[in-house]
Amino acid sequence: MTSNGWIQIALFSVIVIALTRPFGGYMTRVFNGERTFLHPILRPIERAIYWCCGVDEQQEQHWLTYAVAMLLFSLVGVITLYALQRLQWYLPFNPQGQTAVEQSLAFNTAVSFITNTNWQAYGGETTMSYLVQMAGLAVHNFLSAATGIALAIALVRGFARREAKTIGNFWVDLTRTTLYILLPLSVVVGLFFVWQGMPQNLNAYVDATTLEGAKQTIAQGPVASQEVIKMMGTNGGGFFNVNSAHPYENPNALTNFVQMILIFSIGAALTNVLGRMVKDERQGWAIFAAMGVLFLAGVTTMYWAEAHPNPAFAAFHVDSAPSALQAGGNMEGKEVRFGIADSAIFGTATTDASCGAVNGMFDSFMPLGGMVPLINIQLGEVIFGGVGSGLYGILAFAIVAMFVAGLMVGRTPEYLGKKLESREVKMTILALLSLPLSILGWTALATVLPAGLAGIANTGPHGFTEILYSFTSATGNNGSAFAGLSANTLYYNMTLAGAMLMGRFIFVIPLLAVAGSLAGKKLLAPSAGTFPTQSPLFVGLLVGVILIIGGLTYFPAVALGPVVEQVAMNHGTLFAGP
Image 1 (cartoon, rainbow, N blue to C red):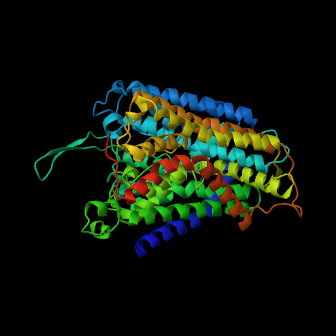
Image 2: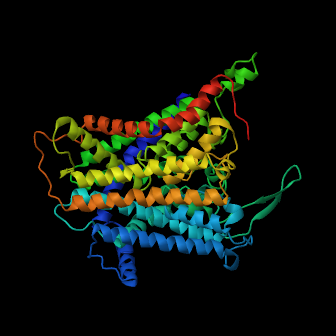
Image 3: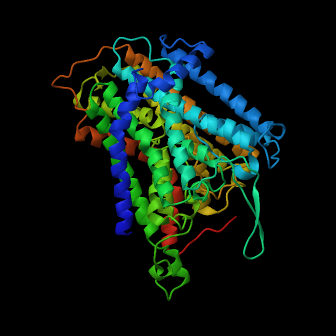
């Protein structure tokens, strides 16, 4: 652990904080339909989109109508992306002649990108044509991100409105998010990435001869345009197989830092949107503070774990101290251009958010270092979280926290001026229970079936962690992986797709019901018995509820994986391939 590493963590945190309020203010104006500096250019385009699609922007929707619109939109997305992959041999912009994607893999990928998971059981440069990368994957990077943000705004409106029957219009929210937020930023940052050395072309791959005389094929293509929305939309799907460890996806330390900022930018700003829409910015900062505490705990743990040498080395080299064998810490699995500190920030941020992009391989991290991203996702990815999903996820925990507070003081719980009654609490608990049902259920199945066990690269607790992480990542709509799992099989393609669908839709539909119920209620004036939800006490309660629920639910599984592996490693025991 070095002073340089701590300075990078501090600088990253300061920039995220500095961006939160101005970006949040801009997004609030967009969602309220207010004028922004982009209106002279984009407002005519917005009107034209509504005219072409037959959308009345003044007509809002009941929560059930909003949910149905979202589900139908997602279904059409799955079908079109599946078709693009299966037909890519016959379509243009395929200079490498990529053939049709295998059926189960095409289905898995379609579900993955629609749910904002971007799980990749394939190598992008060897599987997908340029057309599929652009019109399929990159387009759905925008649309799945916009869908998540729209859902979060719908829940916020539930708290902000009084005696209303509607929570907005899904088609309007989707259009405004894409047109005013995601596209302008993608154009600007995409040009910056091209300037820094990312390819953006439609050329065929280049054959080169190395200094040793070997032949090498260098893949290229429209990389920059997909990279920016991959990070900002917390999608994580890489153009290349090794994701942000590839020099074309991540040319230098500056692009690496910008990518990390992009991961948190929208999720952090949405906390300010919450505060502005409920007319009290302190509420948003309280949510931000809870997220910040959990982020700092995670990044510190991962940095500490990876900055120390592997203790098992001492068992095999009794005459050498482990510090002499790994003087700089555990560099296995790290991109040498960025080092341990940047890998710790990137790895923590990408799993705090539902991004899944990586510049290092978690499978090669120390057990406790690899445990951090696992726990980040299992906590519901509420630590800034994915675009939209982080906010509506942590609001679900806030409802539970206020329910617990109400039980302690013997009064009906309230949050953001709304009374939380039986319906809201039941729907919230239903949403939260769907996550462990998927993660632990699918994991248990895979650990007893031959098809599930066939995919692991290691025996013992590390192999178990590979399986647990895959279903954790899929359910959390994250997309990162312990790279040792061979997931491109019929069994994993289908079961992981099922986990992605459960993590996205079974989780969010009850929360839309909560939004609809809250929108119809009156705003309550604060009283002497009102629990202050903008105070440090609330932040502590919220963090405690998140950790207790996560700990009670997942600790037994985590103990069987990275915890026991770390203990075994400390005693010189390692686990080889099966």
